Amino acid sequence: MDLLFAKALGDTAVVQTRACDDPRKGKGVFALVDLHDGEVVMRDSPLALLPSAELSEAAIEDARDVPPATIDTCTTCGAFTGTLTTQLKTLLDARAQSRPAAAPPAPKPKSGKKRKGSGTAAEDDSLPPPPVKGLDALALPESEWQPTRLRERMFVKKNGAFCCSTCATHPVATMRERAEGKWKAFVDAIGGVPRADRRCLLLGAKILAVALAGEPDAVNGVAHLCSRPVWDLAPSNADDADEYRKNVRKAVEASWPKLKAALTAAFGADVTKGNGRNGRNGVPCTLETYARLCGATQMNALAVKVPHPLMKYVVSTVAAEGALTEHVQWLVREKAERVARKALEEEKVLGGLMDIDDIDLDSDSDDDETRDANGDERYSFRWGTEQDEGFDFDTTVFPAYKGSAIFPLASSLNHSCDPNCEVAYVDDSRVHILAKRTIARDEECTIAYVDPDLDGEERREELKETYGFDCECDVCIREGFVPHLKRRKVLPPKESGGGLIWGKLDAELKARFKAEKQAAEKAAKKGARGPKQAPAKKTAAETKKTPAK
Image 1 (tube, rainbow, N blue to C red):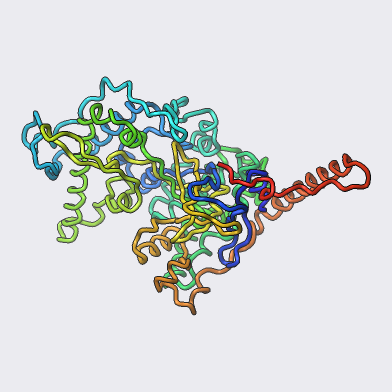
Image 2: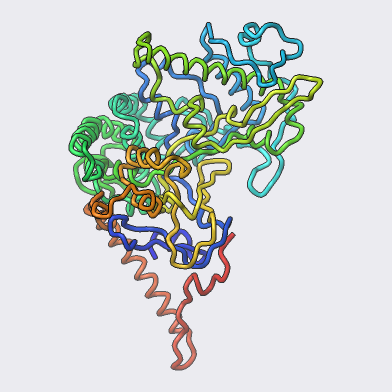
């Protein structure tokens, strides 16, 4: 078993990492025991987290154009903070501030009736959101999966709001606080690169900060993911492979001096000077390290999506209809306005009446109906009675927390368009990997990097654009997307565990692990009676007959 998994999961492990039969895939995660539908395969916390809002803001030149936040979350871990009431107020205020002075008329409610006590449709559309008062009793029901209350905002600083001291002192938070101006210069330097590449560069920079200043376990957690520089990851059969390599290498090399300046300001020159192994973790602060970490994010980052607590409240609490009818009704109409406004802008572009540059194509917000329909968990409701006015809505009016993250364990899971595992987030960015069906012992555990319900061409295009590879799973082969003569020519084989950067670290870790194992065996033999040898230590599969819940 991989040393990282052995240390993190111990004797309770129901999975292990090992080399895949296909050398291009590198390592994979395999079941140690039979797993059944709904059972937990693993849990993991991210090394670094990149909110989608932060990714979009990096492309906005004027800070005054940054839209207000629709959710209150911890800057480091993504946990929702405050109360249901404060979350509702934040959402309503943000939506109200983002409305243009003259919004297009929203479609009429599906009921076709005029709302009780209201004026004309135009007058209703221009009304401010209803006040949030008398709702302090709103609370989520207690369950195994959901805490009874949201987390408190323990620390509010210039660089963000945090739910605990651990999050407030995270290496990324420390860097952004101590090197605010230099970090902003780095972000500005990559603001113009394509969104997928910008995501790799931002996450790679954050992981480097964690590796330089975090705990040694954090370094071990990312070492096994680093194989090649990001510019070596373009599919070799892609028409634009050479152009991609040239552009992404230029972006990495141009942004590196600004990132190094931010790291130096945050952690000191002794951590970042020279090309040797500096700092308490012995990580080289070099362009090569940065490029390899960007490559790790390209190949291993997972999408994070934490449901809004108000969505959970509406789904689980019957009393929600009486408490939130006015607020939800206003949100439904405001969302219809946004959809109509976006459709009108696209129509003007097609008609030559508007420049395409005037449309926010970089947005990852929840008003992107196509993105929501493909990815968000949603529940549909009809509130109201025949006597009163009823209206239809779904829970996507409550925006989820979205982002990307690198996980030390879960990022080792490979992709399949027909996965046997699924990814779940409960109340923050900690990931739960659950079995979707029975998984036999020694079978590889896989997840879907993109929505598996997408059309085959859309699915493959998103995988190539976001993760840089052409999928060759059984589904893609069955659908005729992978000609047999070309199946093995998509990506060069991955280099084994970390290459030049992490070789010494891996050797030291293996030596320490071997010494500890030999010491334990020696102690066991010494305590044995007579010439009889001490029994061999049982494996996780032998000691654990049923998988951990």
